[in-house]
Length: 260
Image 1 (tube, helix red, strand yellow):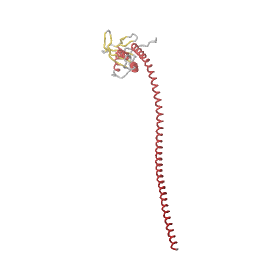
Image 2 (cartoon, helix red, strand yellow):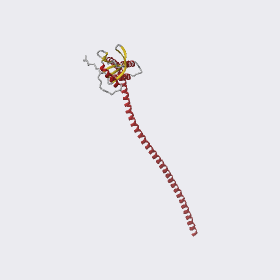
Image 3 (cartoon, helix red, strand yellow):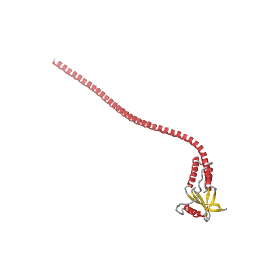
Image 4 (cartoon, helix red, strand yellow):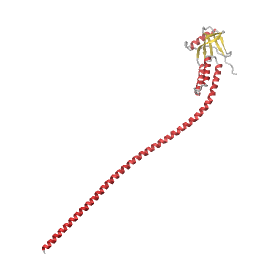
């Protein structure tokens, strides 16, 4: 009886141990499964974090690119605004130039007749003036008239030349001048020294200093002077040639006439 109970206890113990071992094995499998799930979640979490980090970096890069593009766009807006101002200014300049060109055309049409009138007046003035350097002055007028027909000279240059001629005529009245010429003296042509005192007086003296004369505008001719002017004209010639110091000269001057 006792032996049967002992066998039953042993058998029960064996069965209990087997059940316990089975439970432990099942627990190990469950733990492995749990650990496997945890490892999987950790791996997924790491991959998710990597994706988050990558997305964060891409977002930061896009943000920096957006800021750079925005700054460039703002610069382009300022640049375009400046260009618009420049274009507007250039359009105004073009408009002004067009108006100036039209005005120049009108002015040119008006200047040419003015130049001709100025030449006529200058030629008349020379004809009425004392006949000093007469050929030179007349040739200058003729040259200016010939230039009016030349297409290779601009209107502005033609006008400048006429103004230059007026200046030369004006300067004649400010200086003491002398030059040689040939005059009919006493019925024969003689080489003489001409003394020009501005437009105040015009005198001559033969190269042998024997005869002297002056231009008389009233008679429109040369008239002889007495011997008292001989030394005075010689003195004036030396001053004009810079062979003597400037000094006071006594010269024949025509009396003024009342205006008509």
